[in-house]
Amino acid sequence: MNKDKGWRFVIPAVALLGLVALFPFFFSLYISFTESTAYNIYRGHFVFLKNYFSLFRDTKFIDSVKVTSLYVITAVTIEMVLGVALALLIDSLPIGKKIFMILMVLPMMVAPLVYGIIFKLGYNSIYGPIPAFFRDFFGTELNILNRPFSALMAVVLVDIFQWTSFVFLIVFSALQTLPKEPFEAARIDGASYWKSTWYITLPLLKHVLGVVLIFRIMDAFKAFDQVFVITGGGPGTATTTMSLYTYFLMFTRYDFGKAAALTVIILIAVIIISKWVINFFYKEVNRNA
Amino acid sequence: MHKGLKYAFLYTTAVIAVGLINLPIVFIIITSFKPLTEIMQPHLKFSFTPTIENYKMLFSETFYLGKYVTNSVAVASLSTIVALGVSLPAAYGILRFGKMKKGVAFWILSIRMVPPVVFALPLFLLLRLIGLIDSILGLTFVYLTMTIPLSVWVLTSFMDEIPKSVEEAAMLDGATRGKILMKIILPLMKPGIVAVSILNFIFVWNEFFFALLMTQDRAVTFTVGMARFITGYSIYWGAIAAAATISIVPMLIVTMFVQRYLVRGLSFGAVK
Image (cartoon, rainbow over all chains, first blue to last red; front, side):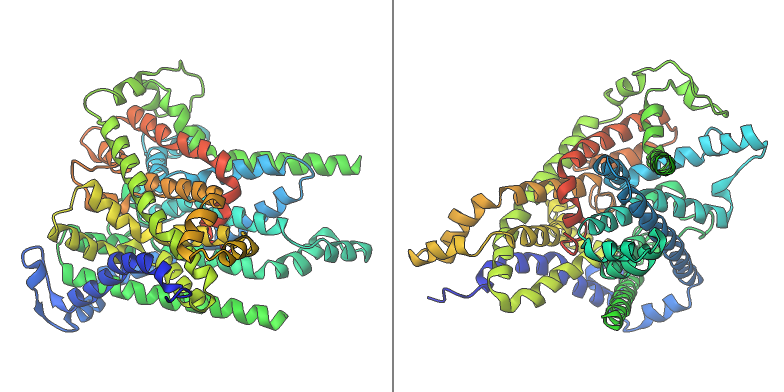
């Protein structure tokens, strides 16, 4: 009787996850070393690193890395600043915090695809309300989705509209759990609201901000649904993120070997970024301790 | 006076912020009640005669709303049941047997961080190999990549709050760990199970990427159905807005009930 062996309870979950998550990864790794297409999926011959080399010579791949970086950096920076500001604002209200909090988190409950649909209509150059607004008030014609830079910023804006809520929710909830004493002490010492926010609140939130930042970077990194619906990656490759490019490699060009190589690169990038972010915040926390 | 002014300013800003952030949702809900001629016009106009034409069109033959919603609900229920079935014991194991806590728990969490596109190709090929493309079962299988990690983490954070003393009495009576889990822990976990089910449901209901790849016709889910409506030759914006509204409203209602657990679920228990 091995009564105290906890692994018995964990085995089903780990086994299933191994089947749906770990096995696919190794399968991908294998495919990335072969020349696989839709016609010889399970019998592609071994080409070792050829797919990887061809990716690094592929300007579309380089473009997708640039697009993804710009997307993630712009969207996440603005979401973090806005989300924290909104959390501080709602937290400073004497009554009605809860109602405001619920209203604030609604956007992230909606399917990203639906946000894509909303903004596809919103940006429409003929009858979309955003171009209509500029037409009525400034007499200018906007063709947001036809220009590379404005198209990218347009999909970034959708991300901001939807996911600022996430930053807000986590930071707001963390604010509710902060100890009261340091703030009272600061007030007695005559510190202003801004001073105590900057020197007490934000340092106390460092760990939480780190967690939020990791989640947002990872989620922005995998953005697909909205972009797919609004621009389909265009114009040209202006909004083709790495996720979209992988999708095109897989399901329009059927170049499975190269697509698999790209997913391996994505995975490595994700691991490096999350390690880097975690280390960064860990150091910060320790330095302040 | 000074204080009153300050609060007036704070509340005004808060109201504007809430209004702005929800503007897209309000916009699409209003659009769903507009006649098509009003939607397809190039100037801003705020007055119109509300109509339910768009909804009528949705329930007509061309858009298989019923089928899509049924598929989404079926996949959501099935993947929730499977995820709960393996995650409840896993959460118990992780919590009560300290040694494995870090390793297993971290491994499970890290799967949440992996972009779905990494799993997409191999899972697609796997499903094709075993003939489960375009089936409820196949899609359920794929969603386990996300629902199991979510369930394990949220359940662990709930179970953590059950005091050990509850079990100790039963242990003295000679009950096995399995029995304790079934007879004592399970009844206490009801709120956790409800929260996990709802979070899983939200995830599946909103998921698009996997559903797009793994389904073609029979198992098409609501989000994929909506996207098809858009990429067709003619765009029925009215009906699309109505479909979007139908997709949004259950989520808004659910939010009211689960907002307490949202933080835990969304941050995978990193923040309580």
